[in-house]
Amino acid sequence: MDKTKKICYCFNVSVEDIERAIENGADTFEKVQSVTNCGKGCGSCLAEAKAVVDELLKK
Image (cartoon, rainbow, N blue to C red):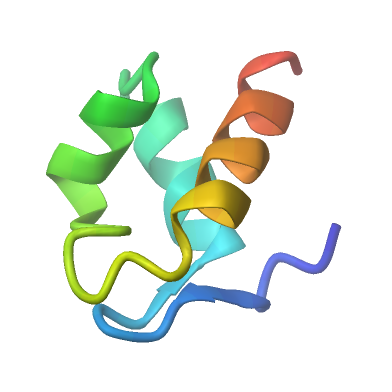
């Protein structure tokens, strides 16, 4: 997975930002969202953001 790929353009959140949130203790999508604001803008990234979080949480 490309860590530099933007997932949320409203808040400029990349895969790496999501990964960092998880490494710092965010263990659910809602917690990742709280830290990164991913998906809290227009909402068009929600499905992809949830999929990325799910994949990264499996590691």
